Amino acid sequence: MLTDYIKAAMKKAKYKMIEDPNPFFGEVPELPGVWANAATLEDCRDELQEVVEGWIILSLQLGHDIPVLNRINLTSSKARQRRIRKPVEAG
Image (tube, rainbow, N blue to C red):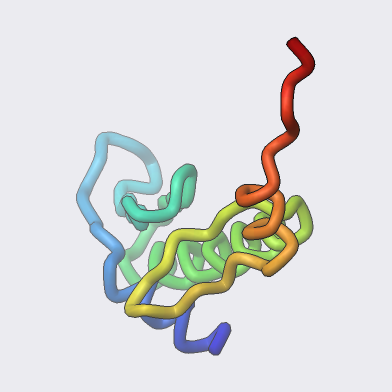
């Protein structure tokens, strides 16, 4: 499931050239903050995949929601429960 999610994320990647010593820029718009740049397109893709993997691991560790891609839901059940059970404010 994790491998399928990473593949789905990489299929959604967008690439462009930027004015930089490492001119190839890639991002996955569905995953906030996930981007990479490198000297070659191949290196940019490799770096972007590593960023996606790290982003998923950190999101899971912190209990953050992870966007569903291709009907693959990686958000932990603990994070879903927190979203459902919101604290009641005293008033």
